[in-house]
Image (tube, protein in one colour):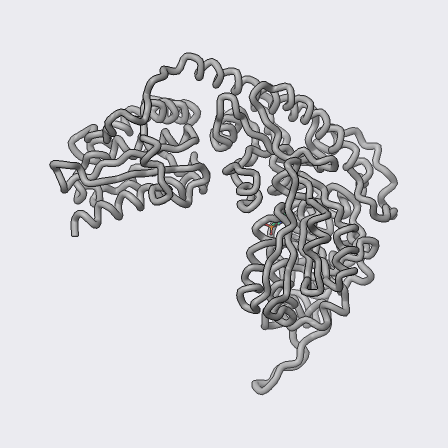
Length: 587
Ligand SMILES: *Cc1c(COP(=O)(O)O)cnc(C)c1O
């Protein structure tokens, strides 16, 4: 999987022969006390865990060296300044930048791309100019360009992909024209793992007279990067995907480009001289680092870079490739599992669906979590890609150097188990509920929302732990009345939910002050939450619905602590829709 860039030799990179267990042992979060089940962490594409070397470097900095950098005369501040600038040197070595001043510290990939779009973009784009992105891009490499395009009249063109998730390079070459000003693509797709031929993409952009920006968020921890060999004009990455802290990232840019760009944010540290009439700006890199930066983050990032270089990218790549091959083989053997993204050159990302019988990615993720396995579900910040693939989202397991075959085997066993269970469930499930049946909206389950909530709270209180309550919710969801397909319209779609949710609410015929509703989702856990809301709200008086403290109820049953934020947001979106209807009745 090695990118054809120059393999640099680092003084430290003597090719580590430390056993893999020892590398894994450096991650405190992966260690569990006897009796605890081990954490199977397979979400490193979202954020990697941190080794002790990074955690300690940040703590040491706070214990011994913290002060604001620049401008102070005292030695402590000079020490902090040196550590911060040493981190920049470490970044420049990692990227093989021509000089450290070309490496700007940002909050992460997102801010790095926004910086280029806001400064280079607004200064250089004109109506009719074109920016080429790819169908594989993360929202971070789409939305900033849309904003710049809107402000300048430039247009966005998109490189399409094939069914395996590979860029169609012939189409790319056809998109290039004298109107192309910039090509911005990721080095590796976070959703599918595709490794893009960035060298070729950059060369073609240059041949067309355009610049090239590479989103390296998903490559940086997995192989050697050489911005000079790539001839990248801009390269962005995040510390937290490289075993470092959150809130720190890098924008590399060629000096002549950065120098010609207007500043990004104004403030302290980025100026040379300020009067109320005029300000002259500082030289690189300070010109783009207004205000007090994330000093401890830079220190942590430098420690992460040292740590990765000690292991060496050759070893990291070989280990991850071996795991990827093993995982691909194991997942392929699971009946009903479909891998999404099967590019020839892939990094350690496995996106998949359970299709027979179908199980929503959200349910896959929730069930794996109950077994101590962390994966990510949903659109992975790539909604246009999901639309292109004709799916709402995927379940995604992603690998890092600390994973081992046991992690992969645990995932595969859990998935095989779940798929088998679902097949048994599907074959015994009753058939015959079809959409032509007269639509029955559920009536009130109790005298008032409060009485229904009290009943539910009592039932849940009988269950000792969250996994059992979770199962209880799923069981509730299985008893939801059928929602006819005809009601699953765009107008009835609830946004803000990670899974697909339809909700149809109306005044109760014959009792117009009452609200009743039907809802459905492709995810069982969401169906469970819908059932909860239905027991409380459906068939109740609008004024009672408005008066009922639903958040108090959620707190009482400890839902908040056990549901992810996106699930809570989805729940809140449903509650909001019902309350809006109730409010319109009361008026
Ligand atoms: C994670 C990721 C980003 C965004 O990174 P942040 O650290 O959230 O700013 C952008 N692009 C890709 C490919 C990513 O994987």
